[in-house]
Image (tube, rainbow, N blue to C red; front, side):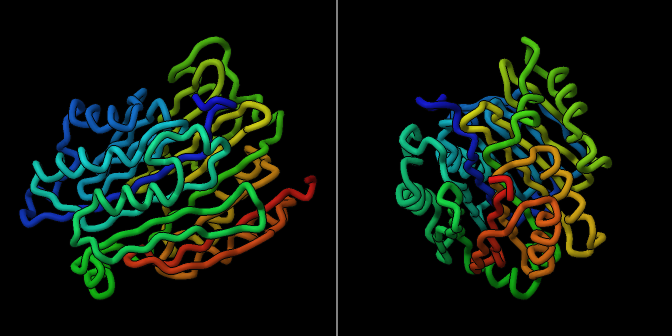
Length: 343
């Protein structure tokens, strides 16, 4: 808990691994037992509250956001005053025990609402980058750190990537990171009060409270095909992971007035129906009705980000800024910020 309120803006860490033994690659990181995952999360200072999986990956709702475990990829997203980057060393150790080595790292976050409440190493982006560079092996030598600005003072996008020479060349030649996939990360602040009010509980927390919030808010309609694992917190707050084949989506909500916040993240393909991303963005904006919204799109191509403004502007969200940057092995990152015309 931050001094002035709960910090909604998450920190996100994505790590990719490779190995020499094809047998290890089939299940890979999914072979980590629950005790090993708990050890990693203990370093971060959060716990598992709910979980679901399928034949592609395992999904965990955490006390502070989410964890996704694929055979050769892991994504951890945590809010509050968690120490996300402290998961790196235990993760590398556990992966090494499975015969896996790291090949790619990506760290992202928005602007903290309560930056002075963040513990080391999250006291500043400079400290985060120094910590990352000290944790990662030297062979991840293609590194880049950047703060992507916007015209909205409360929103900017911090991103760090690192990759090794093997992964970089594979990406360019063999497409180790599929060119068709994209990731959308959305941060929303100043939520509509009526919308935010639906994320206050009835004196209890858990799966039942989560399912009630999913239903009354319309979150379940964002991707009707997804298997949803949801959790409602007492007195307020909500987390959800959605599983749809080998793709995930996730939502986290801090609804308190004065520092209300919600996030949405999803993965898609440029070969999907071109209207899919438009429909999803519209549904997300309609569920939360934020006064301020930022959208980060990561993709090897430019197929997706151009549709973002077209989806949001008819809903009264005006695009205020757009920043573009390139990152080794990650692709193009486009960061767009929007404000409601009611502001």
